[in-house]
Image 1 (cartoon, rainbow, N blue to C red):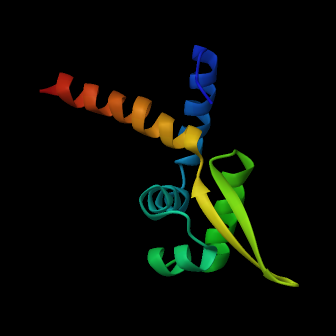
Image 2 (image 1 turned 120 degrees about the vertical axis):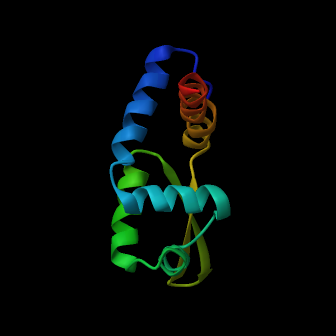
Length: 109
């Protein structure tokens, strides 16, 4: 997705900021951006957080399209789910939010 209108950027940024209000969601986004794709179990072990809390955080992040789920069918009745950070969110995080914080830091010097 290419952000052509400022309203799109503002909407995604506003949703991103509201999602960053929870420490577990922030940790999940950071871990997925560094080491994704990962399963709930892998995230739970890496972050040392109960898998139910991870599952709930992923559900919220998936609801707002911050993460994408990939289902791999291993055998009949057995599926593995892997999560990755959305390309749009990663782009906003890297391009817009990090630039804002770098600009603010530079101005404070």
